[in-house]
Length: 309
Ligand code: ACO
Image 1 (cartoon, rainbow, N blue to C red):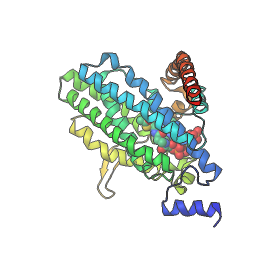
Image 2 (cartoon, helix red, strand yellow; image 1 turned 90 degrees about the vertical axis):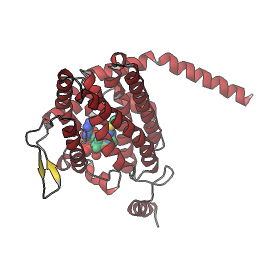
Image 3 (cartoon, rainbow, N blue to C red; image 1 turned 60 degrees about the horizontal axis):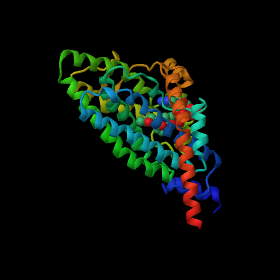
């Protein structure tokens, strides 16, 4: 059997593709793109939450938020490592993101205006991320699938802490309830956009589904998220900001309104509310961290010399 047939056979039989296996160049490139963008999303995703670290309402909430943000950094590192197993260069990928040549998730270009946003980000944004990432635990590339298993466990904790934080607000004063509803109104539609364009408009989906890089389509994942989440909104005594939302008994799914694709396209082309601010923050962090990278390299060189001697 030739290499290409062996690869196809592995994909068909759901035997993981491993780093040293032969794979089509396009498969490798698609994975480096997706895993790289996923890693960037974890790293940029730390910023909207960090905005509230110094203003968390209690020491307990601050400690939990800090732990969550550190988890996101860890997820980014796992994912960059997974991209490296495919020959991706971590620094090169990161520089492409800083130069605006590589995407990260649209969701992180929205501002966190109130404390309720932090709860809603944990609940809705991490909730949406989990729906996608649970499916990715069965992705065909072994190191990516294995990274997802660990990441999903942590994301699940993030989602629960978000829901716990919003529950406290829902049981709070009128002002807290209004703040929560406002946050839901602002984050609902951007959360639905996280799953990407409709299947008919998604240029990468057909090939990624055929190679089992993606196991469920953008629209299937989005539907799952809506079906999972509507009753959670209702349990909080809040409303979903979608007048077209209705349960379809026959299909066993919620029908929902049209996403503002113009807004989505603007955001992924770099023109969202916070795109500039996010990239500026990451560029500053890269420049300010130069001395740390130099020191770490100098230390590694010294250790090497000692080991050789
Ligand atoms: N934000 C930014 N870009 C997006 C988004 C989004 N929400 N959705 C789609 N895009 C981009 C795609 O990256 C692609 O751009 P590119 O070809 O220049 O790379 C383009 O829009 C067209 O979309 P698709 O053809 O549907 O792209 P793809 O098949 O890669 O599917 C998806 C997009 C579903 C996001 C997929 O890449 C994926 O599952 N990625 C892994 C999960 C992930 O990255 N999650 C990040 C947020 S979770 C978190 O960090 C907490």
